Image 1: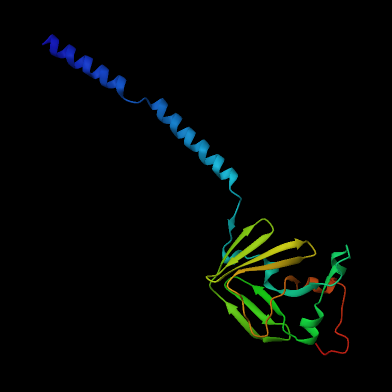
Image 2 (image 1 turned 120 degrees about the horizontal axis):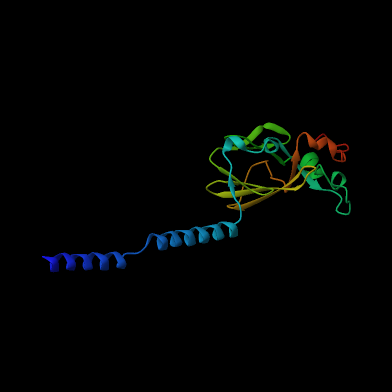
Length: 186
C-alpha cells in the first residue's frame, strides 16, 4: 500500500511540475498588450463622427476662388469667383447637416441635389464624407475659414451645380475682399 501511495505522490509531483506556471501566462498577456499598444501608436488617429456631430461650419459653405495668388492676406487672396457667380451662374454651395449633403446652385437655391446615405469621419483638420460612389474630403486650409474640397471616386456630374475647389462659410464671406460682378446681374 505504501508503494501505491508513494507512486501516486510522485506522479502528482511530476504532473504539477510539467504544467505551465501562472507567472508565464501573465508574461504572455503583458507582451501581447505591449504589442497592441505599439500598433495603436503607429496607426494614425481616425475619428468616426456621428452624423449629429458634423461640424457646424459645414452647414453653409459658399464657393470662393483664388483671386490674387501673390497676396499673403488670406482675405484678399480668396474671394467670389467671377465666372461662376456672375457669368455662367453654375457654381454650387454645399451644406452638410445631420442627415444629408445638399448641393445648391448659388443663383437658384431651389435647384438642389441631395445625398442622404453617407458616413462622416475626421482626421485632424479634415472631414471625410463617404458615399458608395465617392469620397469627399473637406480640409480646412486656413482659419479664416477657408476649406478645400477634394472629390475622389466616380465623377460628380451635377447640372448647373459645379463644385468649387475652395469654400468658406456664409458668415465669413463678407470678410473677404469684395469683387463685384460689375455690369452683370449675378
